[in-house]
Image 1 (cartoon, rainbow, N blue to C red):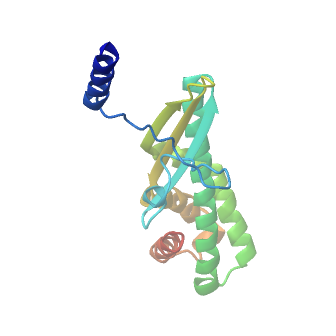
Image 2: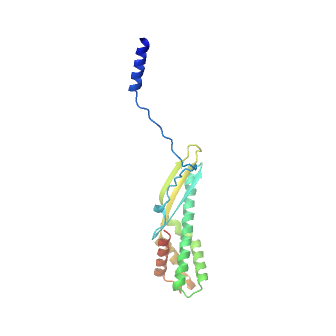
Image 3: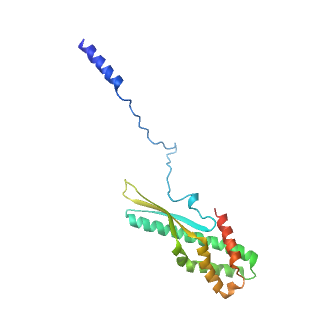
Length: 188
């Protein structure tokens, strides 16, 4: 009889207990790959008409160093994007509007951009910044996106182009500005 009572109490307790919660493990595709999240990137952080944008990231055990180097990476990427866009715009502009030696003018424009890039980058604005710490390694990864108004870039470039006697003969700021805007739209 005691066994029957113990059996009844046990069945009663099992029947009244809370339902078990199943913990699901994150799944990875069959090939063993895992999606990596990259912050401050994607279409929202790409250049658009009138605005140059770029992003960068860096990982370090030192948080401040990771942030500084991520910013430097983003600015370097921005400077490269400006150089490429201005070169393409100048090539297209010279093909349509110039009588001068195109290679010489394009080279002089590239030199001007390279020489004035630090001045141009003074107006850079950080539009996204996210710092993460890996609990396993203790390292920080900082993601940064920056932007620069295209008109500011063109104003700095215009100062140099309009002060160069050889360039000034075949240079029309408004036409060149339209060409740069067109190149920025094509880079989307």
